[in-house]
Amino acid sequence: MIRGERVVALVPARGGSKTVPNKNVRPLDGKPLVAWPIDVAAATDAVDRVIVSTDDERIGATAREFGAEVFDRPPELARDDSLVVETIRHTVDELADRGEAARYVTLLEPTSPLRTPRDVDRCLDRLAGDPDIDSVATFTEAEINPHRIWRLDDDGPPEPFVDGADPWQPRQSLPEAYQLNGAVYAFDVDAVSEEGASLLFGTPGAVVMPPERSVDIDTEVDFALAEALLEAGLAGGDDAE
Image (tube, rainbow, N blue to C red; front, side):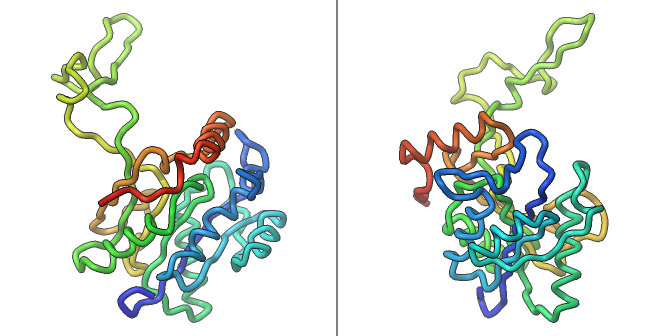
């Protein structure tokens, strides 16, 4: 609990990955990918309940092995084009039907395995500590500053993507830019929208994470990067505030 309110951790893990088959049960540093967010949630003091939403029996069995509850996800929410927010809505409705009184949910996707309990705590602290905030997400410094992105037209010269940008500026002179890293989302269940694709509900807030904990696994290269960071001991440490 946090400030007297219950917290549920939701791990969405469907079984139909195409780029990396069986991704959510594939071992990373000897542990199935879906187990990484389960373990982080279990180590986060504020989290009262850990639920994995899946359509896949193997993922469900693995989730139970590592101590999570499993909610069966309907097939229509497990297609390639299904939105994560649809699973959130389904799970929030299911929790209400089962009498769960949690006020907050933190979404922990298996594809961001290098987050730490401290990252989750910071999001929940920000959410519960500010009455004007309805949701929080983690960000990291943008891999490519938008002032250095170009637009290429078939018949025209390359042009800066941002009108008026000077892509030749030294890095230190560029405006700060951040991207969502997908590691942690947290939100008040009452703020969950009934439509739209966004995971930033109501008035959102941000928590910044370092790049070494912001790996988002979508390809074999991402898997290799996460393995290398873990082997080198560069992932898992908390950043100074």
